[in-house]
Length: 163
Image (cartoon, rainbow, N blue to C red; front, side, top):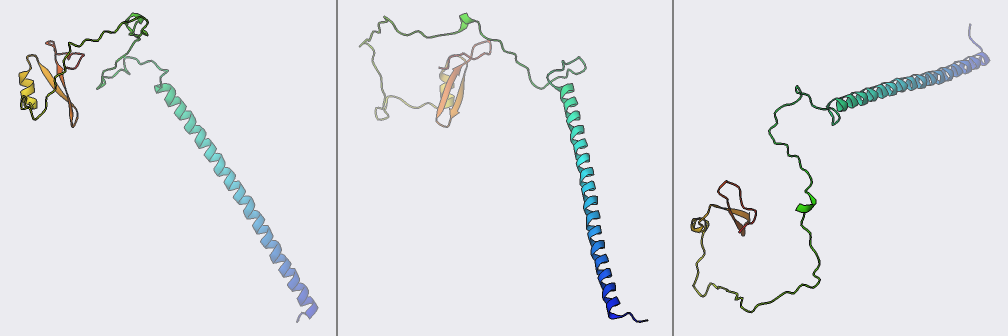
């Protein structure tokens, strides 16, 4: 039996409508599946971030500033911890404005200057300078063209004033 042209056209229309319907249904199903998968992934990410946050909070609380060290937690350190306290008020130095102060000038002070042309001096090197000093001293270099001679006390502590 051969279908008539009218039947053939109707069969083609039904087949085409079925294909469009199937394609639309498949697209809708894929969208729903993708949405569910993204929802699951987002849920896993939220759980992961919550777990990391709780773990970091617990680690901070356990090892943070708030916990006091016990004897088991105390370990020898390669540094010395220095604790400072504020100076008493009597130890602080302050300045006062000049009110009725008299500053005297003297003409008895003479300034001595030497020039390389006079030949009355010679430049000492570091070893000669340190050998000419009667007390123990250290020569400290500040930069390439600047040094400081620091005298050392007999107990090994350096003077507070560089000379």
